[in-house]
Image (spheres, one colour):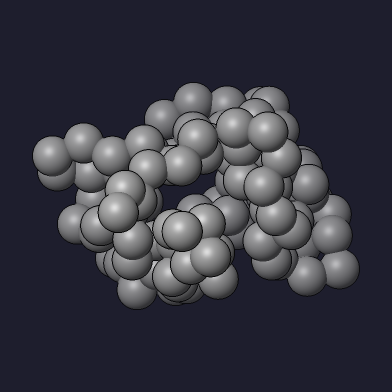
Length: 104
């Protein structure tokens, strides 16, 4: 069984999430898969990097990672983002985000 999906790429020591962000939402949550990206609503507004900070904090908390293990690697001012996750397996990411069905 492969844990590879279009929005989640794995390497030997990290994973890369491809995200489409919807800032200013009522609550922060996964909305589903949109093409080759995972769509995530973020409660924080897209002002002064607040949405990026909220996204990274939410991912760290949801995935059980330390803050320094979640890094924004592209998309600083865009809704399309790539986030690097250290010290976690792809299957664990999918389970923690409620997308374990995408493993099948």
